[in-house]
Image (cartoon, rainbow, N blue to C red; front, top):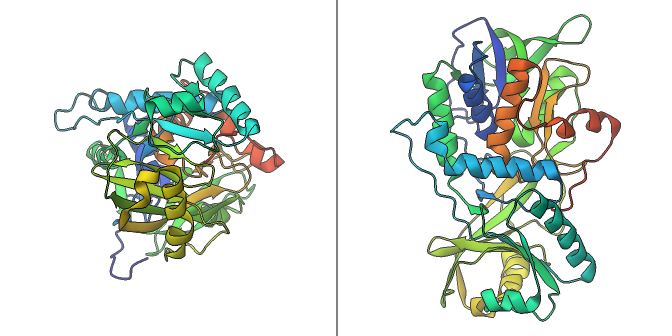
Amino acid sequence: MNATVDFQTPKQSSYDVVIVGGAMYGSSVAWWLSDNADFDGSVLVVERNPTYENTSTTCTNSCIRQQFSNEINVRVSQFGAEYIKNFRKFMGNDERVPDVVLQSYGYMYLADTTEFADTLKEAQAVQASLGSGTKHMTPDEIARDYPFYMLDDIVGANHNLIDEGYFDGNTLFDWWKRSARERGTEFLTNEVVAMTRNSAGSRVESVSLASGEVVGCGTVINCSGPRAVLTSRMAGIEVPVEPRKRYTFIFDAEQPLDRDLPLTIDPSGVHMRTDGQYYLAGCPPDDDPAVDYDDFVQDHSIWEEKAWPAIANRIPQFEAIKLVNSWAGHYAFNALDQNAIIGPHTEVENFVFVNGFSGHGFQQSPAMGRGVAEWISHGEYRTLDLSPFGYDRIAEGRKFLETAVI
């Protein structure tokens, strides 16, 4: 952590809930707890860097999609879209809260093999059964609606123009944090450095802060993003979450398109979309290992050798483009199955995971925050059943099957 950041001292010696990490998920869970009429406990959110510099929250591309293959992932995003579109209402019709616009230009999954096209069709059937507007498209249909694509190698695609696209996730984050604080949640600039379990090892009794205080806790919630395993190891728990580097590029086009560019997932692994007056592209490196927690160094060859060639190939109109900004961020990558890990540990009963979103974090944060708050308040999920994301599958090495992972 930046040495110039001053640690703060907690106001109490113990809290009903201690949340480790105050970015998108720490703030989401804190706000949903504050909004749950059946919860009246004390909440402490401990954040090591209040600037949130380099967090997954800060580096996000802030999009939402319903195009998943697993029913619960679709339902999670459907609630996310409902929440975004009705943000002020969910925030109690507070006149200070701005409306959040969901720009529904959709995701365009392009398939260059019949096998992947069949996978898209299967996913579309699941999505349609749940009320999603996803359509499977032939190359002729793609060309009719988006004539700028080069489609010589494309055999089909899935696209959805309803409740799928870009939203300003940082507005949600800012207001969750602000509102939770106004309702009594304590946000503390400090760092959890150790945890103490009871003699049976079944509960975390206290957390130790970098400033020296020891704080008692009823429940510990791990909202540490890519650092999730560093937090879980304090309680003697392993979790397969690691930082993986992801690159984002903002570029200007000499010949802009005459319509919005859907968030296009190219078979090359590069994705691109409209971003205001510019365009945004992103991709993983071809060699994709776990990286150091503080490694945000950019590899500029990825733009020159991977992203730009793929962009110009797929949209010939983008042969003349200019890079105007770029950054590297971290996915909180679940190395088992690239899906969320939600809920209590199987043995340390008051240690709760909100981890491993693998790039789905912002779009899933309304439903996941609500669900965790329900579990804390009631001991069960009362809206969406999030148990498929539970830690038991991690302990068993059992993968959560989701084919639509970017």
